[in-house]
Figure 1 (tube, rainbow, N blue to C red):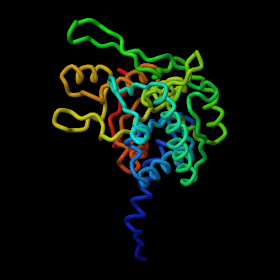
Figure 2: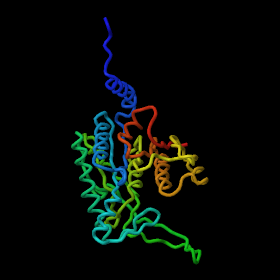
Figure 3: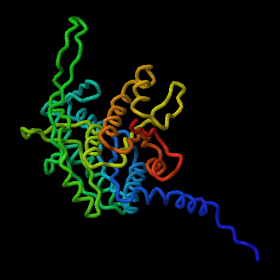
Figure 4: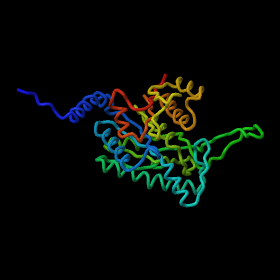
Length: 300
């Protein structure tokens, strides 16, 4: 009797599922915090792929928490309303008017779009900001610079920009235990009750530490950390990162992302990963395959 050979494409899918099984078993019940960046959100197809990935993680027993950015969307709204933006060390200087617009865009337009996308992918998500239930308490962010003329150190007032000092995880735990996915806008509340804009990478890192996450994913618009020959560096430790920073391999916007990763793993997160959010199903490739897909940072 002649054996029947299945369609190669179907066989490949079966092999993929077989490869994924031990990873599903390993991470069942664990928390993954995913920072979904403004640039990584991409087009409608990319947003649908992301939503499918998050819904699938929840379906196989992982507890994802999404923390989203929205810088491009805020910038577009500010431009429409004739408000100029100024940045210091990658942080938007935020006056009262800018803070109101940022909250409107992040907690409204962007957050609701992600929640709706997850619903269309078959998942159940709950949108919120760090203000809800005082989920994220912040203090005013402070930055200094050296005046090139006088050589003196001076403080820069970033306005209503905050940095997390306390995460109350109870709301996140309640939502996750109810079978739903928290989607968090990066808005926090000060001890004085004021509203503050928070860098989404920083908030995601703080939430990952507070929830004891197994993984922190920073989805962005680059492949990961590249060496000087443009090759992807797949595994790094804090010591490696220090060396790459000293020799100039990592520069610019990658530095604060890696600082967030280091802070997270030193705070107890098992690993942090910088991924190209434009690659279809990048998170699934990273989590459920031996090869992975980005730059993974572990403690020394």
